[in-house]
Structures are given as structure tokens and as C-alpha cells.
Length: 116
Image (cartoon, rainbow, N blue to C red):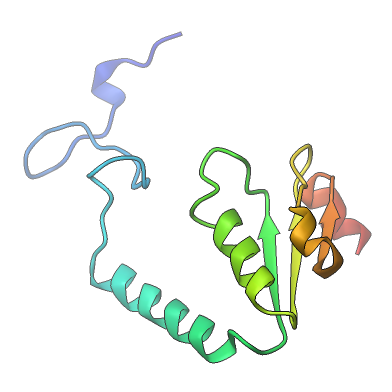
């Protein structure tokens, strides 16, 4: 159960093995396109921080909660007009502080969407 090394993608410039662009180490690429998108996201959050907003979390588990899950919880807690919705089979949880602002669906995302 191994992959032959000649099938692994390599950088056309330096020849090193290619990897996924994941926020797991210091190789995560934040190019100009990423920075523009991050700026638009920050602008959206700032414009809507006190308004009626839904934070919809689909399938975010406990592996990297600091990127989506915890910020969504914090923003929901800070805004009484916000709602938090989580669809995640086996990991649909919410802190008690935002229970009244939340809907958690413990289901496969595809099945949950089909039932809507």
C-alpha cells in the first residue's frame, strides 16, 4: 500500500515534493488573492458584527477549531442578534453560553441538506 515516488507531484522550479496548501506549518501560502479575500471577510464581519447574522458551520471538527469553530462561537456570544448553526455528524456541539442562539444538527451534511 505505497505510492511510487515517481507519481508524487514535484515543484517545477526546485524539484521538491509538492504538498497541500494547509495551515499546518510555515509553508501555508498567503498570496495576494488570499490577502484580498481575507480583507473582504474582515470587512464583512466588521460591517455586520452587531447585526442579524448567521454563522453556519458545516463539518468543522475538533482538529482545527481555532480557525472556524471558536471564532464563530465568540462572535455569536458577542452579538445577541447572531445565530450559530452547526451541522456535523458526531461533533455537533455548542457551549452553554450560546445554546439559546444555536441550532446543532448531529447528522451527515448531505443528508441534512437533502431533508431541508
